[in-house]
Length: 216
Image: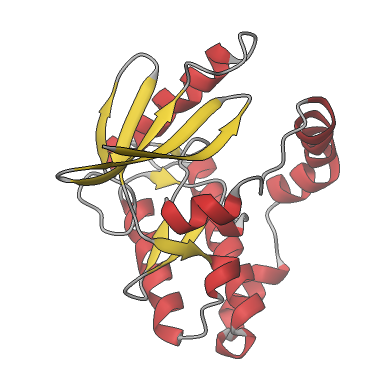
């Protein structure tokens, strides 16, 4: 068995494990700082719940198992968006279909603004990873629809970066009209979030993104 450390931070470690029957990803919270261990494990359980809700969906990791301190999920081979720089129109159509499939299953990602969370897989298809901040709703009410719209808007931002010529009039309208919640987040909460994660925790959202994107 071969082990490759992909990421290590205050919340624990992420490993790629290569066994005789294939590769998988291991999230291990045992090395989390003692004062953040509870949060690391809460986020891990959250990810397990979301992946269980997406069981069978192509383009997202599949949950293998989740114990008290570790989570195992399937391995997706590809590169993060900022490395793959997709230009094929089919990629963005497929990404939109995948997002609709997730929303139909009651899942919003909540973190698609980060390019490392979107992969260009080896076969040219899209995949979404890192579901620690995702949420699931049975009823898909107003808050769910608001968050789903933000998922769409963030995906369209990436489309605007790599293929702005493909944007439709409706898509440009969505890009130009962020929700009230998004405006509040950007103006009030995001500066606090950045201060806590980068200044206090010394953690960057893109830390290890190159390795993780290639192997996760």
